[in-house]
Length: 215
Image (cartoon, rainbow, N blue to C red; front, side, top):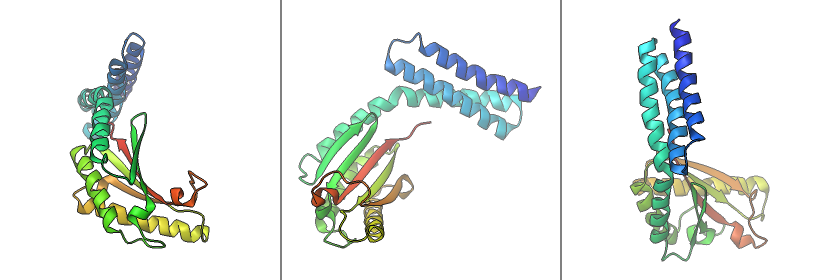
């Protein structure tokens, strides 16, 4: 009986929140409702797992709804503010460009600013750029970060993959030295697999992708 009731709580929270979205007239309100519904469902499951009773399920659903609603309501504005801070921080940089896709931010850096040819040792210019972006990442810590290393197609594919990974790790370590929590950062080497131009110099780059945390 208790298990059936917990399932009912999860389903009711999700259905109620999703149904209410049809009547909401703003993206912000819809985000709040969807977030609350998902949060309630997750919270209910966690509450049941921890408390192993109906009371635990109900408490978990309430906590999950509150957290999910906060994320759904605030994430867009949070990323708006972070984007502006990032653009301000990088305004004087000739090595970086900033792009946004929905609520994901990407800072792309020219590879020669960070590394010498065939090297994974950061240059002084790379440390300067990392210090700029790290200040923003520390200010807006409700995000996950992917550091992507990219190369041109000179040399073997396997070698380029390894070189790009070493470079991504070097940038991750430098960000950590600037106070960015390394648990937030994922280093990925893409090698030559994601070219963006016929110009090899454009493909030799470092991309720092910033993704919002959601409940």
